[in-house]
Amino acid sequence: MMTAINKANLPPRQKYDVVIGLEVHAELNTKSKIFCSCSTSPQIDKNGNPLPNSSVCPVCMALPGALPVLNKMAVEKTITAGLCFGCQINKVTVYDRKNYFYPDLPKAYQISQMFHPICLEGSVSLSNGRVIRLNRIHSEEDAGKLLHDDINDQTLIDFNRCGVPLIEIVTEPDIKSAAEAAEFLREVRSRLTFAGISDAQMELGQMRCDVNVSLKPIGQIKLGNRVELKNLNSFKMVERSIQYEIKRQTALLDDGKKITVETRKWNDAKQITTSMRNKEAANDYRYFPDPDQYPVHLPASYIQKLKKALPKLSGDYKKDFINLGLTPYDTEILTREKKITELFLETCKMNKDYKKIANIIINSKDPLTKNQIIEKLNFKPTNTDRARLTDIIQKIFAAGYENNKPIDKLINYFMGKVMQATKGEADPELTKEIIKSFLTEK
Ligand SMILES: [Zn+2]
Image 1 (spheres, rainbow, N blue to C red):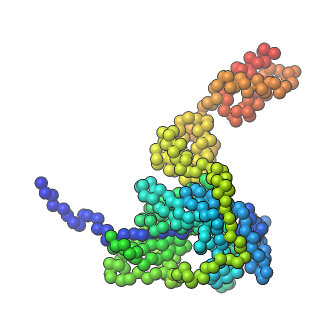
Image 2: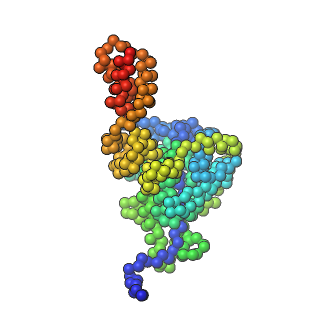
Image 3: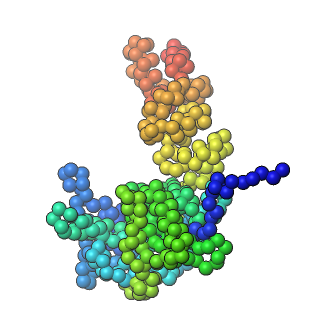
């Protein structure tokens, strides 16, 4: 039987393919800057605020004659980043000058990598099964910060951030929606934090993301004109700006208009993007190898050593948690933040009701308040292993004690020692019983 279809109830047919590529910058958590010995943490004033221009030197201020010396840890952490994404690590890597003028860049060039980056290729698999390929991960220095003082109508410059090591993760234009972009970024953040190479907090500017968005008629091979989105300080902003931009470009194309190649700024208050400037082509930067830097050789044995030292990443924990019987949703939330994963693992040592622990942590407003979680779980001491407790108590007795005290006091004394040794896990009744038997034996 045929059923009449009311076309008005159908979603609009998608006319355009969405093509998105990301450029993600993440600050590496080295102690010193990438080309000088200045600390990456500026000095703090008496109110706890960072003092502007308190962590600067002739190198990062670009005074004449100052020469940059590469920080080995910045290279090492970039290689580690590459290993987290399955990248190839180049045997020889070279730093280049990216030339442009801006007041926050005192050399008028940024030391970056164009032709021989440290890492090539690599990928991230999304939950829908699609694979986002990486083009590269390269190493570079950060610029300073401009502070606009609207009251006195002036702009101030703080060079503390100048020379802080960054990695730039560049994807191929494989992302197809705002949701995929957000998932990709969460995965990047997770891998960098689990590897311990970046704190990667977008809200603090430790991870920044530029988004390239273009549309093309479905099935067309040639890519459409792309727009770069900037000023995105959270995963939410990335998602919303892409959604807005897809709508804006769709409307223009529907009207038969052309998309201008440009950089647009996200205005979070108004939830729109506005034009910033026409996009520079790569050759405008006149990239060339930095004559102040030697090419860096990265022997296979060195890469192998770093590979061996790679800690467990979120993906490894996800597999573990699935094996514990948790759902993919639970494992996703529990592995977004390293601290949450650690808390879950720590709590599981005290109680084996993994699903209950997962639910409490996931539904907790502040999941890092550990005591409240333990309270909610209403933990019973799990250390009821008589042989293990006897062994612990025997060792404590062997260390010696003053036996001229009343038995009650002695019991309390040993109870304290046992709780200390078992981090409070020992079953109190059983512990007391074993202690008593030791004391009466003597
Ligand atoms: Zn410096």
